[in-house]
Image 1: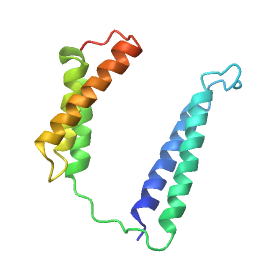
Image 2: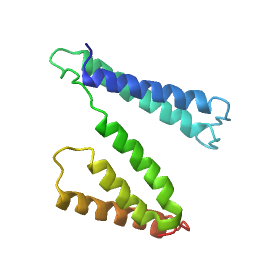
Image 3: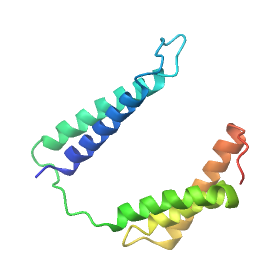
Length: 141
């Protein structure tokens, strides 16, 4: 059985391959005049490199073995993405961000409400600062 690190690296390598495959038809250009294919290629290469490093470290002796995975965490993460998509337009980015944090926290069996509330408020503040103040995007808050 493979280690957790090896399997995570394998999944990341597949994502890097999908990034490369998706951006292969875009014009690459060069660092001076970057085309639309420059960033996907760069991101895919960086992710592939990190994936290989993670896979090699996972193959080394003493790496933690993979434990059985329950369905609670993946279901909650998927539900948080759906909630974000459904809440973004009618409720705004801050409410959608708080919902994502709370729903993801429900995937952890021993979470604490105070910590979840602090993370939710911090993430909402970060979203507001980044997208509204710095990037000046017209996002409903």
